[in-house]
Structures are given as structure tokens and as C-alpha cells.
Amino acid sequence: MTLALRAVPSASAATQNAVIRAQGLSKTYTAKSGPHVHALDPIDLDINDGEFVSVVGPSGCGKSTLLRLIAGLDPQTGGTLALGGRAVEGPSNEVGVVFQAANLLPWLTVRENVRLPLRVGGREWKVGNRVDDLIAMTGLSDFAERYPYELSGGMQQRAGICRALARDPKILLMDEPFGALDALTRERMNLELQRIWQTNAKTILLITHSISEAIFLGSRVIVMSARPGRIIADLPVDIPRPRSLDAILAHPSYQSLSRQIRALLNAQGEVE
Ligand SMILES: Nc1ncnc2c1ncn2[C@@H]1O[C@H](COP(=O)(O)OP(=O)(O)OP(=O)(O)O)[C@@H](O)[C@H]1O
Ligand SMILES: [Mg+2]
Image 1 (cartoon, rainbow, N blue to C red):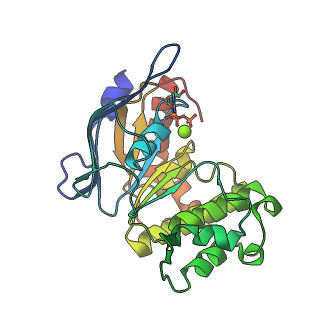
Image 2 (cartoon, helix red, strand yellow):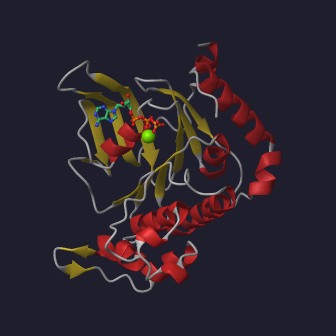
Image 3 (cartoon, rainbow, N blue to C red):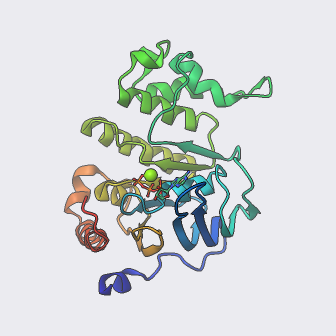
């Protein structure tokens, strides 16, 4: 409790150009039988244009629920939620989502899967070389014509990330996107994601169980309580970019943030 109180001061609470704004946002899942699940306590959250916000919290605390609400995939049961000042009423072209599982269509090749979001209503968005560039960036060029069953889990996940980026969405929502990757690929993807964010002016919300990943990538780290999830800390990461994986570990801000977040999660019963 003491820890939570100490950590609560917000990084950017009073913001004017919030691209994502949640006010009193809450979610309760209604069950046909058995008790309802109160997943999210009322949450106030402003995310500014171009911010990179990492979210950590205990398993089952409502992180994916929050992401699904922002993605317009599920309706909230309380409060308001707006993207760019407009209430969220369903999925938007401006938002790309990367889920924990890649969910590729098994009858399409990697390239066809990545192109899929570009085909809407019988028309195809013109995006130049972006699809092939994305496939190359994630090291999948040799597998562009292969089918998902011919790929490892990590490769499928990389294809899923390419698919989310195909339309060059302004907002990217990522739900533990690198959990299935081996350590080296994960590091490479972290660097690539930092580069994409720095060069493309995207607003990114990243859910992760990795404290180091949250700090490495985030301009802020939001820490959530155990279910029903609420925000118990909103911590700015004042470490200059571009950040390198080696250098950040030795940075004093990294070490103190890491300790602080770990203590908060431990107090919620979660250790990384
Ligand atoms: N569609 C659903 N119907 C009913 N309950 C749900 C549904 N989706 C999630 N829940 C419940 O809501 C709570 C929060 O789930 P959520 O998936 O948001 O947690 P999480 O923080 O993403 O967990 P994890 O870190 O394990 O992915 C859980 O108790 C879960 O059982
Ligand atoms: Mg989840």
C-alpha cells in the first residue's frame, strides 16, 4: 500500500492532445452462469500522440481487456473511451493490433496474410513496397511464400506483427507480442519496434510481462493492480533515445525504475 501511494504521481495526467482518452473506463464480464467477472475498475488514462506506453500487471488483472476496449473489439460497461476525440464504437482503420497469438489464416502464405488488411471491400490499398519491407525487417523474406504451418511460433508472431503494421496505423496496440519469441529475436524485435516508433510517429501501447522490455521501450510504464485492474503507478522513463539494450541496463534510472516496478508487482503477488 505504501509503495503504491509513493508511486502514483502521474507522468502526464493533464494532457491536451490525448490520442487515447479513457475516463472512468470499466469492464465487467457478464457470465451466463456463475459470478460476473469484474475485470477493470474505473480507469482514467490519457495517452498523447506519439507516446510509447508500456503496461505491466499481474496475470488476469485486465490488461488484455483494456487493450480490447481500446481496439473497439469489446464494449466497456462503464465510463467513456475516445480515440482522437471520437468515442470508440468498434474497430478503426487507424488502429493496428498485435495479439499474443499470431492468428494467421492457414490457407494463405505469409505475404498474403500480411497483405490481408490492405484488401477491404474488394479494393486494395496501395502501399508501395511496405509489405516486402516489413517482411524483410522481421527476417521473413525467405519465408514470404510459405504457409503458417511451415513456420515456427516465433516466425508466425513476426508475420502477425507485419500484418498489424501493413496499413501503417497511427495507433499500435500490442498484447505481449514478443512472449513467444526466443531471447535474441525478442531483443531484435525490441530494437526494431523502437526504430519503427521513432521514425513513424506512432502511438504505441505495449502490454508485456517483462519489466526490462517495458522500460526499454516505454516513454511511460503503467503498472496495474491485481483484478479488478486499476492503475497504481504511471512512471515516466527519462532515458534518452535511441536506447541500446546494453547501455540501458547500466543506466541509474533503469535500475531504480526496475526496482520500483518489481516491488509494486510483488506487492500484487506477481514476480516476473
Ligand atoms: N470474454 C471474457 N468473458 C469473461 N471473462 C473474461 C473474458 N475475457 C477476460 N475475462 C476475465 O477478465 C479478467 C481479466 O482478463 P484479461 O485477459 O484482461 O487479463 P490479463 O491481464 O490480460 O491477463 P494475462 O496477463 O494472463 O494475459 C480475467 O479474470 C478473465 O478471466
Ligand atoms: Mg492478457
